[in-house]
Image (cartoon, rainbow, N blue to C red):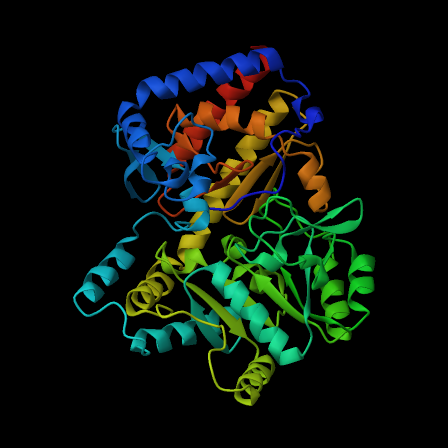
Amino acid sequence: MTNTNKPSNAPALFSRSGINWASARTMRERERAAFSASNPRSKALADRATEHMLFGVPLHWMSDWSTPFSLSVSEASGAQLIDVDGHQYVDFCLGDTGAMFGHAPVPVARALAQQATRGYSSMLPSEDATWVAEELARRFGLPVWQFALSASDANRFVLRWLRAATGRSKILIFNGCYHGTVDDVFVDLLDGKPRQRDSLLGQVTDLTTNTVVVEFNDLAALEAALSSGEVACVLAEPVMTNIGMVLPQQGYWNEAQKIIRRHGTVLVLDETHTISSGPGGYAMQHGLLPDALVLGKPVGGGVPCAVYGFSRALAMRVERAKRQAPPGHSGVGTTLTANMLSMAAMRANLSEVMTDAAYAQMFTLADQLATGLREVIARHSLPWCVTQVGARTEFQFTSQAPKNGSEAALILDSELEQIIHLFLLNRGILITPFHNMMLVCPQTRVQDIATFLQVFDECVQQLIRG
């Protein structure tokens, strides 16, 4: 799951234009009461969990949903999720891309069952690892690959490799970015100045020393920031997705790549979310040429795993840096990296689930969802917009899509988001708990889209009229 850096006590009040706010708050309390009454088993589990889990959940982010207590899952398959009280949901969250191709894909489940009797981890390569690396090279156009257990780890490892390979200590990120739990990226621009994010717990070093941050879509700022020649790499999503979606402006990446290469800097694209763009990700779909690429949770069908790839030239520099280093632990990799269970899942997912046909179906469904959202928003004259990246769709509380992280942060309104999310949840529709993002998977049905739009329309009507 991902998170934003927008404080919940700083709503963008202009996002509430057209909303009957007094009635919206009444609506929130009514929906909270309805949820509590309908989910006694989840409530009992949540009460038990407070005794032995921090914040009463396995991971503290799980308490950030709009619900008064955590919803506990019983099972999930395809586009459907069932909670412990027996309620069924159409899942448009899909584990925030962890299950982007549906929960428990049959080919992945079959591969896991077969591998379960043949060993899980040996700290040695398997045949599946070679197959997966070859397939990644074919799909993404980068010939040399390594593995990790999460995109956070993959990004962390890439930064370490590239600092060693380039001899440069600094990295550049975009304001409002998110690349997992990599400490280096928790730096924001406030009033045009870099500042370590206040919410980052336990950080004892000044991240602004080696992390440069600029606004997305600002070519002049990128040029100025790289001109010192101290930046090892630019780490970026080709489309910002976690502060609300921010699309690159026309021609931005073409010019940005020229600037990055002119200053001898390496371009790393984190495609963990933008893999929604197509079988080869956003870069292949739009002709970008990164030096390195990171892909996390979707690649194994939800099984913990991640991959990162290098161009041939960059891989040679990385290998040279390792061979020239003193003996000992490099700080890269973990014991379970490329374990046989994860590799079997990745091979099955890449060969049988992440297919061209699956993407074509997802794009058709996402187009229907985006079109329907725009129609509902227009019908009620709300100053909202809809943004889409392949199978990923989001509605945002602004009439014009944001151009950078600062603009995106201003339109976040967690209180309004949570009212909408809880209304949907109580009627069998699940979307991500942060901002208003939805995914479709190959098992999403046309009827699921129609149901979502009907419930969303009902929600909007109540927000406006009370």
